[in-house]
Amino acid sequence: MAGPVITQQKIMDHVLRLGELYPPIPLGSVDRTVKNPAEVSRRFGHVLDYLARVELEVDRNVLELLVLLPDVEEVDRVFYADVWQPQEIQHGLILDRLQTDLGQPPAEPVLEVSMKMKILGALSHLRPIQDITRLLYYLTGASTERQAVIAYNSFTKGLVEMGEDAIAKTIVGPIKQQEPGHFAFYKMSATGLVQSGRLKPWQMYLARQLRSLSYNLAGTNAMERYKTQMGGLMHTMGFDADLHAYAREVGRLEAKLLWAHRQGLEFPQYVLKALRESVELYAEKGLGAATA
Image (cartoon, rainbow, N blue to C red):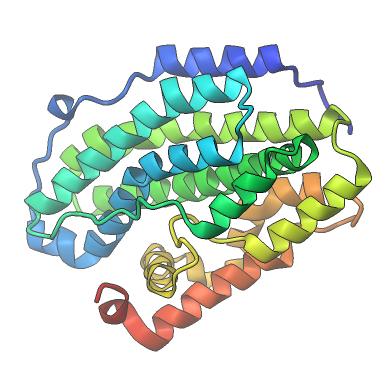
């Protein structure tokens, strides 16, 4: 496909640079001063809980990778073991500490690898299937990190508008700064894999089918309660005002890589479908049912 050739060395250089530029954020480096705890909790408490839980689920994500990619490539291993996991777990711990400061219960991350993942992992011992799985891993990571970037940008703006500068500048700001590098890793990796020509037409076809069937928004874990919470987050952040624009931001990369044969496709329809489902669940059930 068109564009600069992305080599494994370029990706490794990016990963090593991320590790050098952005070491894990120490808990002692942040200022958890909150001027109006009750109002922050009222407006953003559910957002904070959602983000903390998703970040803390990085430990399960690593276990999933070990299952899905039995012959993991070195650049992937360095990224998830030396850069991504150490950064993300600190994000989760800091956000969780902040929400308990506000009087909220601690996050309850889902840490068990699903049976669906285990079955796909068993099939991934076949190299052609593992290449498909690797592409899906990169696309999932890119979608998740893009959602994180958008959410943290909006969260920062909301906190600044409330005058909560300490947590905006020393907690959400530094976390937000690390997420684009993660997105870039997944984007480069997915693009490089497709560029390489390693995936045969039947593998690309199967990847499209599996992605269509398995797509989930970040942190929803294919569970209704978390889809409902995601709907609440989108409502609070105002993303539900223009779901097409949000779907375009989240799904642009996989539209380009997986669906390049469909000219003019801005995003896959399964992205918009997932967004609508979360928004509709929230409208129907509210956050009470989602946190029960």
